[in-house]
Length: 479
Ligand code: FAD
Image (cartoon, rainbow, N blue to C red; front, side, top):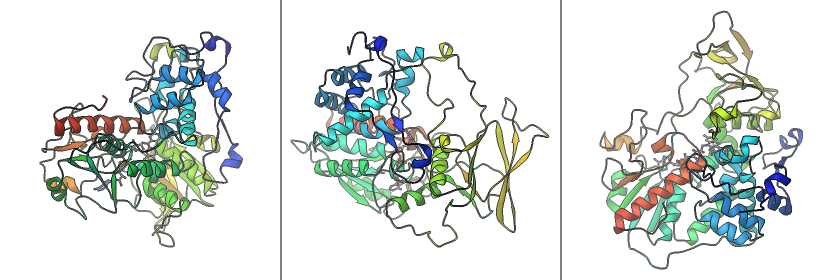
């Protein structure tokens, strides 16, 4: 237990942000971390309440031992706190930055609207571990001689690769892009998580023997069959990439884009990677444009923040959901899941938000987008007659989710032998992660559909355990 009376004496204090007017001038992270003594005070608010919601399945998908490391931080034993944190989470500095923190929603103190600042403490522990040099490669003492292929280097693939390398397998990660990280690199902007956090984990993993092969598109540049033949097991961790189609008119207009090409271009520009679209018609730049973003989730928010940083004149976000009531009745829904409506830091940078708004059509002149036609919706999200309105727009980004893996790759190559569920995700058992194809496993968004980084890490870790068990007949990897 941390400080017995901590939660009574100490108020919750959140990390602060740079003011919006300053932070939209750059792409770097803008959170102002709490000083170390304050992090310890915040950790001391954890009362080890005995109700395992924060580290149970509703609170933390990787089952972080939250009360334990809160106590260790309060006791000033940061190194042990870091060890504890890494025993359940391969990349806590990622989740400490970008997780929506279902643990805080599940915290007992959230009954009083003041949960322990679990995410802040997690980030502080992980960052200190890097500063102090406690994060080092942990290569296996013995090699097993088994060779494993992992397709995709997002959080699911990287977590699985690290776990499997540490128990002595030869792990090869095959990645289509020039760098590792998946959506954490090419989707999520630097202002939420700078890319050096990924680079130093790649360095750590290389020190553990993981071999990354970049620019390899399995099922396109390299046949899946080759991978299956040459490895003892294959893990598919390729994410959920097919954008959901809004099924409305005007998609062909210049200025209408899905969110991901926009975010990928921006992330590449910010990190000095080549952007082949620059100076081509597909170059997407929001500077001095009126921007409309369709969708209300993380992807939409990231488009909003990116557009502001590129100098958009206006950014309007369309959300089909209703505006949340001022005060929610938490007693009815606690512990609840944090996909409820919230205001992201990007939205707080000045976005106009239109709630209960359906997007009816993109409208334009001479093939170029000029506006987005919308209507208010009823409780069943059906457009209400007579409520139509048009928002001025030079650019529109569609961010209404993802519908499953790309089909034209290894999925096609398997020709139906690799079973998919009714949402077209790769069908794999939720405990063993085994697919319908012998020695082929699947984990992360490609299996569960679009989700969160913390779920991808969990699935990668659990799939690694299952693969180890499959290859060795037993496993020492944690559940
Ligand atoms: P991905 O991260 O999608 O990685 C898949 C990898 O596989 C990619 O690197 C891809 O290039 C590679 N690949 C695909 N096909 C092939 C192939 N055929 N051959 C070789 N390689 C291939 N979650 C949060 O928790 N917090 C957030 O703030 C957040 N923000 C988000 C913002 C955006 C814009 C998006 C799109 C998602 C966001 N998410 C967020 C969700 C989160 O990023 C994903 O749930 C998570 O990254 C899924 O991890 P993954 O490893 O399963 O797949």
